[in-house]
Image (cartoon, rainbow, N blue to C red; front, side, top):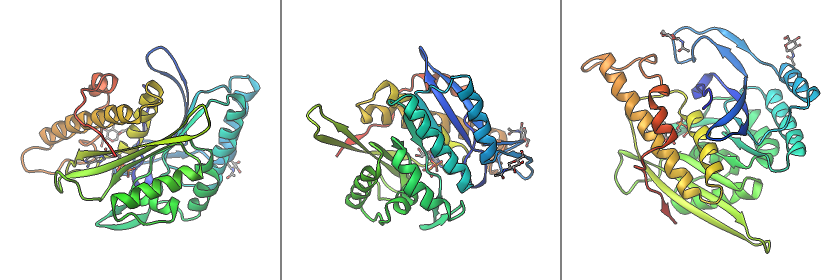
Length: 304
Ligand SMILES: Nc1ncnc2c1ncn2[C@@H]1O[C@H](COP(=O)(O)OP(=O)(O)O)[C@@H](O)[C@H]1O
Ligand SMILES: *[C@@H]1O[C@H](CO)[C@@H](O)[C@H](O)[C@H]1NC(C)=O
Ligand SMILES: *[C@@H]1O[C@H](CO)[C@@H](O)[C@H](O)[C@H]1NC(C)=O
């Protein structure tokens, strides 16, 4: 569908502006960085786009009156002024199309060994809380990011549901906590993801559907999984706007297929008993085309 570049810890981010077409999406991708390699590699070099350069690109679209989009997708960002510029652009795009859906992966950090650590500058947090999340329609934080954005800890499923309600009250109708360290019924080999979707009835009242999913952990560090997740969630919520359960089942199932193919290929390349390197662990996206387009459902969501 489109180019999804790595996010983890350091690297390659992008803004994607999308208009849905027959089966896929027509994409205008803005490379907020252009690097030789993601930063998990030993060597990498390239350029970083700054906020005035982003504004310049947007100005060009506007002058040609081709600034009508249905979706905006953003990921890893390290610069507060760049992030603010993204929000300004999203707001203007929403004036052009009031139905525009902004999908935001609020990349802030992660929990390793139970201890949360931010891997973007701390001045991004207030920008996410005060400017980005209020204009976002769909957000995909991990547990640590959901805690930072809501200002509350998650120690149980109940607390996670409260946190998702707090996040709804800040703006987005759809919240997916993509991974958490909550105990999984199937054991410590599994990670828990949670989702919550608020829909408005014609009479103005709201209903909230909440779901839980379990996904088998793979013993490797991948780069680009967060971007892949957010991009597929965008596509599947487009197909199933009022059914987060189905959208998440397809997203997580496709994730499973991509990661299984990737780890199997990586292990074969690394050889018996050797740890695969970052190049061997590159997500097998092209090889997984069919799984991405029509994933066999292997992850079932539970409605809470
Ligand atoms: N090692 C892994 N094992 C299983 N699933 C993974 C693994 N790494 C990433 N994923 C999948 O990728 C999704 C995004 O993960 P990640 O890139 O760590 O972003 P986040 O930190 O936002 O959860 C997770 O929801 C999970 O489905
Ligand atoms: C990065 O480096 C590897 C070699 O380590 C190379 O095979 C690959 O094509 C490079 N580019 C990307 C985008 O990974
Ligand atoms: C962005 O980069 C351009 C060069 O392309 C430079 O002239 C400008 O001052 C930079 N702006 C900011 C805000 O850093």
